[in-house]
Image (cartoon, chains in turn red, blue):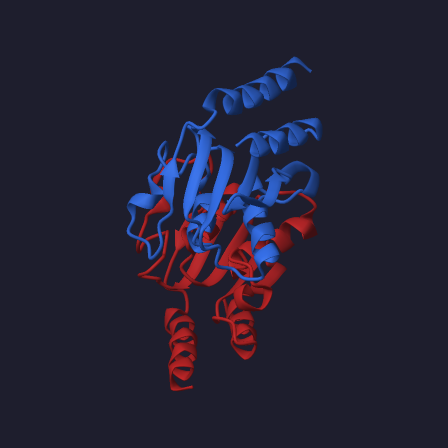
Length: 143
Length: 143
Protein backbone atom coordinates (compact mmCIF):
# COMPACT_ATOMS: atom_id res chain seq x y z
CA UNK A 1 0.00 0.00 0.00
CA UNK A 2 3.02 2.28 0.49
CA UNK A 3 3.72 1.99 -3.25
CA UNK A 4 0.09 2.83 -4.02
CA UNK A 5 0.39 5.88 -1.77
CA UNK A 6 3.56 6.92 -3.65
CA UNK A 7 1.57 6.78 -6.89
CA UNK A 8 -1.25 8.82 -5.32
CA UNK A 9 1.32 11.44 -4.30
CA UNK A 10 2.53 11.67 -7.90
CA UNK A 11 -1.07 12.15 -9.04
CA UNK A 12 -1.49 15.08 -6.64
CA UNK A 13 1.64 16.71 -8.03
CA UNK A 14 0.10 16.50 -11.51
CA UNK A 15 -3.17 18.01 -10.33
CA UNK A 16 -4.95 14.69 -10.55
CA UNK A 17 -7.17 13.38 -7.75
CA UNK A 18 -4.61 11.45 -5.64
CA UNK A 19 -5.56 7.82 -5.92
CA UNK A 20 -2.91 5.19 -6.53
CA UNK A 21 -2.93 1.47 -7.21
CA UNK A 22 -0.46 -1.37 -7.57
CA UNK A 23 -0.68 -4.99 -8.66
CA UNK A 24 1.51 -7.49 -6.86
CA UNK A 25 2.12 -11.21 -7.40
CA UNK A 26 4.19 -13.34 -5.08
CA UNK A 27 5.82 -10.29 -3.60
CA UNK A 28 6.70 -8.85 -7.02
CA UNK A 29 5.42 -5.42 -8.06
CA UNK A 30 3.87 -5.90 -11.52
CA UNK A 31 2.23 -2.52 -11.99
CA UNK A 32 1.93 0.86 -10.33
CA UNK A 33 -0.43 3.56 -11.56
CA UNK A 34 -2.35 6.62 -10.54
CA UNK A 35 -5.43 8.40 -11.71
CA UNK A 36 -4.91 10.27 -15.04
CA UNK A 37 -8.47 11.34 -15.80
CA UNK A 38 -7.95 15.09 -16.12
CA UNK A 39 -4.65 15.03 -18.01
CA UNK A 40 -5.73 12.34 -20.44
CA UNK A 41 -9.34 13.57 -20.55
CA UNK A 42 -10.40 9.96 -20.26
CA UNK A 43 -13.30 8.99 -17.98
CA UNK A 44 -11.86 5.48 -17.60
CA UNK A 45 -8.29 6.47 -16.62
CA UNK A 46 -8.61 5.37 -12.99
CA UNK A 47 -5.57 4.08 -11.10
CA UNK A 48 -6.92 0.55 -10.70
CA UNK A 49 -7.88 0.10 -14.35
CA UNK A 50 -4.48 1.32 -15.52
CA UNK A 51 -2.65 -0.92 -13.03
CA UNK A 52 -4.66 -3.96 -14.14
CA UNK A 53 -3.92 -3.18 -17.79
CA UNK A 54 -0.21 -2.76 -17.08
CA UNK A 55 -0.08 -6.01 -15.11
CA UNK A 56 -1.76 -7.93 -17.93
CA UNK A 57 0.78 -6.48 -20.39
CA UNK A 58 3.58 -7.57 -18.09
CA UNK A 59 2.18 -11.07 -17.73
CA UNK A 60 1.16 -11.38 -21.39
CA UNK A 61 -2.40 -12.46 -20.67
CA UNK A 62 -5.68 -11.11 -19.36
CA UNK A 63 -5.97 -13.55 -16.47
CA UNK A 64 -4.24 -12.08 -13.43
CA UNK A 65 -4.42 -15.30 -11.43
CA UNK A 66 -2.73 -15.02 -8.07
CA UNK A 67 -2.41 -11.25 -8.35
CA UNK A 68 -3.46 -8.84 -5.63
CA UNK A 69 -4.65 -5.28 -6.22
CA UNK A 70 -3.79 -2.58 -3.68
CA UNK A 71 -5.59 0.75 -4.05
CA UNK A 72 -5.69 3.78 -1.77
CA UNK A 73 -9.46 4.28 -2.16
CA UNK A 74 -12.32 1.81 -2.31
CA UNK A 75 -12.88 1.05 -6.03
CA UNK A 76 -15.85 2.37 -8.02
CA UNK A 77 -18.11 -0.08 -9.91
CA UNK A 78 -15.98 0.17 -13.07
CA UNK A 79 -12.75 -0.70 -11.28
CA UNK A 80 -14.26 -3.34 -9.02
CA UNK A 81 -15.81 -4.89 -12.13
CA UNK A 82 -12.44 -4.82 -13.89
CA UNK A 83 -10.81 -6.63 -10.95
CA UNK A 84 -13.46 -9.36 -11.24
CA UNK A 85 -12.88 -9.67 -15.00
CA UNK A 86 -9.12 -9.87 -14.48
CA UNK A 87 -9.62 -12.59 -11.84
CA UNK A 88 -7.62 -10.73 -9.25
CA UNK A 89 -7.12 -12.83 -6.10
CA UNK A 90 -7.51 -10.14 -3.46
CA UNK A 91 -8.37 -6.44 -3.34
CA UNK A 92 -6.81 -4.42 -0.52
CA UNK A 93 -8.08 -0.87 -0.23
CA UNK A 94 -7.33 2.05 2.05
CA UNK A 95 -10.06 4.62 2.65
CA UNK A 96 -13.72 3.85 2.02
CA UNK A 97 -15.59 5.90 -0.58
CA UNK A 98 -19.10 6.78 0.62
CA UNK A 99 -19.97 8.27 -2.79
CA UNK A 100 -19.03 5.60 -5.31
CA UNK A 101 -17.41 2.76 -3.35
CA UNK A 102 -18.59 -0.50 -4.90
CA UNK A 103 -17.19 -3.04 -2.45
CA UNK A 104 -18.70 -2.05 0.87
CA UNK A 105 -19.96 1.54 0.87
CA UNK A 106 -22.45 2.26 -1.88
CA UNK A 107 -22.74 -1.16 -3.40
CA UNK A 108 -21.57 -4.64 -2.44
CA UNK A 109 -20.55 -5.78 -5.89
CA UNK A 110 -18.87 -8.95 -4.65
CA UNK A 111 -22.03 -10.16 -2.92
CA UNK A 112 -23.22 -11.17 -6.39
CA UNK A 113 -22.03 -14.73 -7.11
CA UNK A 114 -19.89 -13.91 -10.16
CA UNK A 115 -17.84 -16.66 -11.73
CA UNK A 116 -14.82 -15.24 -9.94
CA UNK A 117 -14.84 -13.16 -6.78
CA UNK A 118 -11.71 -11.56 -5.32
CA UNK A 119 -11.37 -11.43 -1.56
CA UNK A 120 -11.48 -7.96 -0.01
CA UNK A 121 -9.74 -6.26 2.87
CA UNK A 122 -10.50 -2.61 3.55
CA UNK A 123 -8.96 -0.04 5.87
CA UNK A 124 -5.30 -0.67 4.97
CA UNK A 125 -3.42 2.52 5.92
CA UNK A 126 -6.87 4.10 5.70
CA UNK A 127 -5.92 7.25 7.55
CA UNK A 128 -2.98 8.10 5.25
CA UNK A 129 -4.97 7.15 2.15
CA UNK A 130 -7.83 9.38 3.23
CA UNK A 131 -5.67 12.30 4.32
CA UNK A 132 -3.91 12.64 0.98
CA UNK A 133 -7.35 13.02 -0.63
CA UNK A 134 -8.83 15.43 1.89
CA UNK A 135 -5.65 17.57 1.77
CA UNK A 136 -5.84 17.68 -2.03
CA UNK A 137 -9.45 18.86 -2.03
CA UNK A 138 -8.80 21.34 0.81
CA UNK A 139 -6.03 22.98 -1.24
CA UNK A 140 -8.20 22.97 -4.34
CA UNK A 141 -10.93 24.86 -2.49
CA UNK A 142 -8.39 27.41 -1.18
CA UNK A 143 -7.25 28.29 -4.69
CA UNK B 1 -27.42 -0.55 -33.24
CA UNK B 2 -26.71 -1.66 -36.81
CA UNK B 3 -23.27 -0.04 -36.52
CA UNK B 4 -22.69 -1.85 -33.21
CA UNK B 5 -23.66 -5.11 -34.91
CA UNK B 6 -21.18 -4.37 -37.72
CA UNK B 7 -18.45 -3.99 -35.08
CA UNK B 8 -19.52 -7.26 -33.44
CA UNK B 9 -19.25 -8.98 -36.81
CA UNK B 10 -15.67 -7.70 -37.17
CA UNK B 11 -14.88 -9.07 -33.71
CA UNK B 12 -16.12 -12.52 -34.72
CA UNK B 13 -13.89 -12.46 -37.80
CA UNK B 14 -10.93 -11.79 -35.51
CA UNK B 15 -11.86 -14.64 -33.19
CA UNK B 16 -13.04 -12.23 -30.50
CA UNK B 17 -16.35 -12.68 -28.70
CA UNK B 18 -18.69 -10.69 -31.01
CA UNK B 19 -19.82 -7.72 -28.98
CA UNK B 20 -19.87 -4.27 -30.54
CA UNK B 21 -20.57 -0.76 -29.28
CA UNK B 22 -20.93 2.74 -30.66
CA UNK B 23 -21.21 6.20 -29.14
CA UNK B 24 -23.51 8.67 -30.86
CA UNK B 25 -24.25 12.33 -30.21
CA UNK B 26 -26.91 14.27 -32.05
CA UNK B 27 -27.02 11.69 -34.81
CA UNK B 28 -23.25 11.75 -35.25
CA UNK B 29 -21.21 8.56 -34.83
CA UNK B 30 -18.36 9.44 -32.44
CA UNK B 31 -16.92 6.01 -31.80
CA UNK B 32 -17.31 2.41 -32.90
CA UNK B 33 -15.49 -0.46 -31.22
CA UNK B 34 -15.58 -4.15 -30.57
CA UNK B 35 -14.24 -6.48 -27.96
CA UNK B 36 -10.44 -6.99 -28.23
CA UNK B 37 -9.76 -8.97 -25.06
CA UNK B 38 -8.09 -12.02 -26.56
CA UNK B 39 -5.95 -10.26 -29.19
CA UNK B 40 -4.78 -7.52 -26.83
CA UNK B 41 -4.66 -9.87 -23.82
CA UNK B 42 -6.33 -7.11 -21.85
CA UNK B 43 -9.13 -7.95 -19.38
CA UNK B 44 -10.55 -4.43 -19.77
CA UNK B 45 -10.70 -4.33 -23.60
CA UNK B 46 -14.48 -4.53 -23.82
CA UNK B 47 -16.34 -2.87 -26.71
CA UNK B 48 -18.12 -0.33 -24.50
CA UNK B 49 -14.99 0.81 -22.65
CA UNK B 50 -13.08 1.26 -25.90
CA UNK B 51 -15.96 3.16 -27.51
CA UNK B 52 -16.25 5.49 -24.49
CA UNK B 53 -12.49 6.11 -24.58
CA UNK B 54 -12.55 6.86 -28.30
CA UNK B 55 -15.52 9.21 -27.93
CA UNK B 56 -13.78 11.14 -25.16
CA UNK B 57 -10.69 11.45 -27.37
CA UNK B 58 -12.86 12.75 -30.20
CA UNK B 59 -14.61 15.27 -27.94
CA UNK B 60 -11.43 16.25 -26.07
CA UNK B 61 -12.90 15.75 -22.61
CA UNK B 62 -14.02 13.01 -20.26
CA UNK B 63 -17.62 14.23 -19.94
CA UNK B 64 -19.71 12.64 -22.67
CA UNK B 65 -22.74 14.85 -22.02
CA UNK B 66 -25.56 14.21 -24.45
CA UNK B 67 -23.91 11.05 -25.78
CA UNK B 68 -25.71 7.74 -26.13
CA UNK B 69 -24.05 4.33 -25.93
CA UNK B 70 -25.35 1.49 -28.09
CA UNK B 71 -24.06 -1.98 -27.31
CA UNK B 72 -25.11 -5.38 -28.62
CA UNK B 73 -25.01 -7.06 -25.20
CA UNK B 74 -26.07 -5.81 -21.78
CA UNK B 75 -22.96 -4.25 -20.18
CA UNK B 76 -21.01 -5.87 -17.37
CA UNK B 77 -20.37 -3.95 -14.10
CA UNK B 78 -17.11 -2.48 -15.44
CA UNK B 79 -18.69 -1.10 -18.59
CA UNK B 80 -21.90 0.05 -16.93
CA UNK B 81 -19.74 1.80 -14.31
CA UNK B 82 -17.69 3.44 -17.06
CA UNK B 83 -20.86 4.77 -18.72
CA UNK B 84 -21.87 6.33 -15.40
CA UNK B 85 -18.41 7.91 -14.99
CA UNK B 86 -18.51 9.26 -18.54
CA UNK B 87 -21.99 10.74 -17.90
CA UNK B 88 -23.51 9.01 -20.87
CA UNK B 89 -27.12 10.14 -21.44
CA UNK B 90 -28.68 6.84 -22.47
CA UNK B 91 -27.59 3.21 -22.80
CA UNK B 92 -29.30 1.14 -25.49
CA UNK B 93 -28.46 -2.54 -25.40
CA UNK B 94 -29.47 -5.54 -27.49
CA UNK B 95 -29.44 -8.96 -25.83
CA UNK B 96 -29.53 -9.39 -22.07
CA UNK B 97 -26.62 -11.10 -20.33
CA UNK B 98 -27.84 -13.47 -17.61
CA UNK B 99 -24.25 -14.11 -16.46
CA UNK B 100 -22.75 -10.66 -15.96
CA UNK B 101 -25.37 -8.14 -17.08
CA UNK B 102 -25.22 -5.20 -14.69
CA UNK B 103 -28.23 -3.17 -15.79
CA UNK B 104 -31.15 -5.56 -15.44
CA UNK B 105 -30.03 -9.20 -15.32
CA UNK B 106 -27.51 -9.91 -12.61
CA UNK B 107 -27.33 -6.52 -10.98
CA UNK B 108 -29.33 -3.30 -11.27
CA UNK B 109 -26.39 -0.91 -11.10
CA UNK B 110 -28.46 2.13 -12.00
CA UNK B 111 -30.87 1.60 -9.12
CA UNK B 112 -28.14 3.09 -6.92
CA UNK B 113 -28.58 6.89 -6.79
CA UNK B 114 -25.20 7.79 -8.33
CA UNK B 115 -24.50 11.43 -9.10
CA UNK B 116 -25.29 10.69 -12.72
CA UNK B 117 -27.50 7.92 -14.04
CA UNK B 118 -27.93 7.17 -17.74
CA UNK B 119 -31.34 6.07 -18.95
CA UNK B 120 -31.56 2.49 -20.22
CA UNK B 121 -33.45 0.74 -23.00
CA UNK B 122 -32.87 -2.96 -23.53
CA UNK B 123 -33.93 -5.39 -26.22
CA UNK B 124 -32.90 -3.27 -29.24
CA UNK B 125 -32.44 -5.73 -32.14
CA UNK B 126 -32.08 -8.28 -29.35
CA UNK B 127 -32.56 -11.30 -31.57
CA UNK B 128 -29.79 -10.34 -34.02
CA UNK B 129 -27.48 -9.28 -31.19
CA UNK B 130 -28.03 -12.60 -29.42
CA UNK B 131 -27.77 -14.75 -32.55
CA UNK B 132 -24.33 -13.45 -33.50
CA UNK B 133 -23.10 -14.53 -30.05
CA UNK B 134 -24.78 -17.93 -29.98
CA UNK B 135 -23.53 -18.66 -33.52
CA UNK B 136 -19.99 -17.72 -32.50
CA UNK B 137 -20.00 -20.04 -29.50
CA UNK B 138 -21.67 -22.84 -31.48
CA UNK B 139 -18.85 -22.72 -34.07
CA UNK B 140 -16.24 -22.56 -31.32
CA UNK B 141 -17.60 -25.77 -29.78
CA UNK B 142 -17.63 -27.50 -33.18
CA UNK B 143 -13.92 -26.85 -33.72
